[in-house]
Length: 322
Image (cartoon, rainbow, N blue to C red; front, side):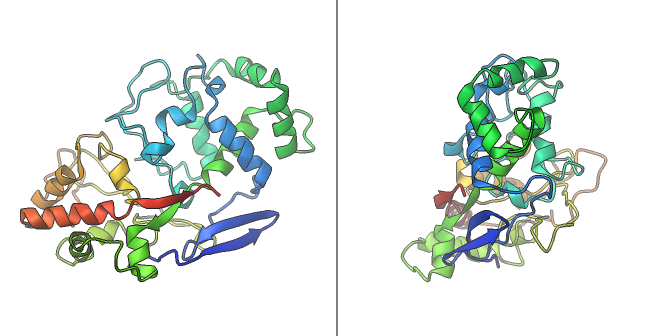
């Protein structure tokens, strides 16, 4: 079963102090982008800064809203110029532990690399800065306060305001988005017997049962597959075909009640529809082989509601941002 948070653990890494839930390991941090408090503060500002889009209408937070567990509530993400993405926006909570980034991309392994994708992607346009880098940097360099923030976060650089440093600062901020402290965590690891309903407890039994096998793909402290952390840096990305036209990464189920609609293309409006899909099993509509786990199972209406209640119990009662 997943590790729990217990009490928070303060772990010093170089000059940075992590405040992590107990049972959560230290995220992998690239050597060329060590964590620092000032870098995280700058990254948080940039994450919400619309000057980082070509037309100054979008920021990272436009598709990753904190109140929706850093998703956007849409079936498929919409870029700054109105173009529709083929995938839904993934939650950024606990993204620091993903061994790969995105629904299908096995090659983008660091947050620093991933930040460049929404910045420069042209098919479809997301933030849309391709061909406008000079303009984007000019906007920031005319702001004395943000220039000062860059200089503090990236000292000893002749020109601290750069695309590379933008990506590094945002990545540092994203590593601090840690979600734990759910009703499930409090019930299992704090021994708080009042925080989970009887329905959620029954759902927990179903989730971890051999009959449903939900926890085979959604496992460990993050309720996901293919996690990386210090001491386990080289985890191979893992993708699954659940009969939805391709192989996709199994994302975290933490805060899943906040991130509807569901699946890579937002085809399911609520958690009951997701459960129905897995209950029926699936035949692939692509040329890839469906996961051997997709054999289906039977649940009565009460059991389905119990499973939904358990999934709702994974919503964090508080979120840590560093």
